[in-house]
Image 1: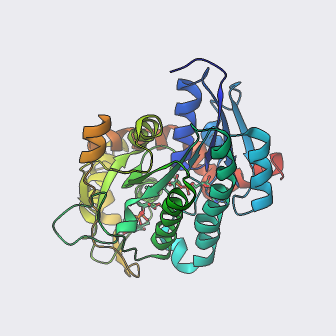
Image 2: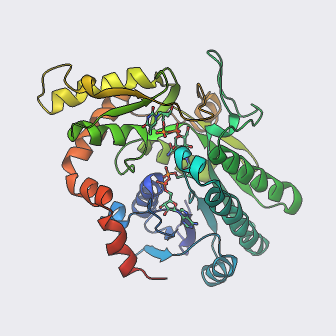
Length: 354
Ligand code: NAD
Ligand code: DAU
């Protein structure tokens, strides 16, 4: 990589779960190539504690702001003249999208379009500019018992969340076709690992097992997800940003399908071992509850393209990744306490008033 003047790279949603791993990777690995500007609104899901270890790095800065505010976005782009954008900021939780779809339209669609508009000027001034949209496999809808999502699977979203991500993907492609904006998109499967907010299945259940609370399984628990360790996703994002072909899409997934009920039982076994509880203790916490409306039966990614074109593959097995994740939540009980009590919101919002 050319060691000339460092480039200004905007990462949106960098205080969130996946974004914080991407920020850390880029700040440390490319410290003399990139200035990383992390733009995040610090919603309930944004937590600067995720980035404590890099906040003093000279090539890192944080800006608090909302991607749905176009004037603010335009000013930020004029000031920093970004050379690239890696866009992760989003409302990301399916259950919240069912009770509050409008927030998902606002951030995921309007926010993305604001970033695309501001990017047009950057692309005019800089032929190497790239807009990278981080998306989800949920845009493809639900699989039956067989088959995989490939890059050419038709979009068929079922939840307000996935509809909003599908909409934002369409806008990115439309800006490529209409205005020649250089872009790449990746659609990834379910992530897990350190720093994930405990509303999502794995961290919620780890926290509930620690606290001896029920593990609410939606429906019969036979829904299937394809799980990927978050650092392997960050590695894939690094590869797609640097080596992905402009105007193309890459599916990212771990070839690692688990029914929710089987995953929960595995987690219970690992947690019993960790907590030195009698085998079978945590499984007794499993409780079947009302199903999620519009619940997609199965996701499974065919990651052949990114594997063959960019040489990417996951670095950890599921059991290794889960053990690392469990260890992280045990070693970071304070993080978990702050997040579950909401303390982190007060502290960091006071520090970064817009
Ligand atoms: P997250 O909810 O943990 O983080 C989202 C971040 O975006 C938060 O820091 C939040 O403060 C910020 N944000 C929200 N609204 C904003 C706004 N209006 N302006 C600026 N910042 C705002 O999400 P995540 O799980 O880390 O997901 C990151 C991205 O990856 C999302 O685009 C999501 O759709 C996508 N994705 C997630 C998964 C997964 O399993 N978590 C899988 C595939 C794709
Ligand atoms: O596939 C990628 C997507 O994965 C991302 O785009 C989303 O941002 C991310 O939230 C995730 O969506 P899911 O809906 O699959 O994740 P969640 O952790 O909410 O649920 C995983 C599965 O577990 C799903 O089938 C619903 C089920 N579930 C979830 C929760 C929170 C339960 O049975 N009980 C629960 O309490």
